Length: 398
View 1 (tube, rainbow, N blue to C red):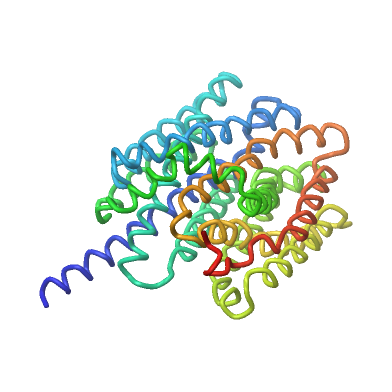
View 2: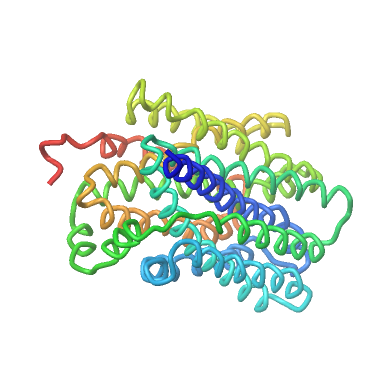
């Protein structure tokens, strides 16, 4: 009896630790995102050059993605996140100080930031899978909602620092240290993840990954995830800039619109599992894609700032479940889940690699606001690919 109580206590503590890891990751990302317009102004960047600078985050994450399996296998999820929290704090400090010196220090900091986020993401999902198995019930989507909670918190605190005229340097350094310290303390309660680490290692084994790369359904799910990742990442990177530049609004209005986008996405992720269980993946995702399209069109063509607010809300809500549902679809067959998730994640991350420079290029020619039409095109493609995420027939999983 005492052992059972002790095990339950450890699982609850690990659950809290995973939430802290997800929230901390989201908070760090959003803290940076709220300061993009000010860093852009400090470096005197055009939209296209800003897009290239933002590319450094995606590059760091993409480099981390194939290495993360080996890192987590060797270090474990707890030590991996601890190391990445330290790297993230160093990188955010480099951005905070480096933007006074020029573009190169900022890009180096952003690369380290992206690398830390990529490996951190894999490690917290590995531990999340361990906790989910120990609890015996589905909780992973709530962990991802925790990430969104962190992004909203980061957006609100970022808005507050701008309103209080706190410098970019002070803001980023303070939250870099605070986030790293809280996450390092939180992950001490993680459970051993030997079994999950072996799954992660299997995901990076070349034979299984190579075979997954030629599976039509896996590639279609990857394209589906890419479309939603592009819609989500573009909102994160460009909503505040578009509101400030194209609607002529104040910086606080830009960050508030960004916060509204994130709040809507968080709401969708928190309540989405019930809708998925009741109506199924394909109908829910199709409706959400239409909602996102509606919101995007309102944001792009709206005549006034209140319409942009409404558009951002619908845009965030509509894109909320695309990425996590795509990951679930990739993992339908447990025996092939690791390889397929690895492929789908790699394809999806291409959106974060190509999205910033594409919107920046369009922004130079037709304004950032009008350039967001590219997101609508990809969401239309996601609508056509929605059947790919239909759950596999158990008799055909192999």
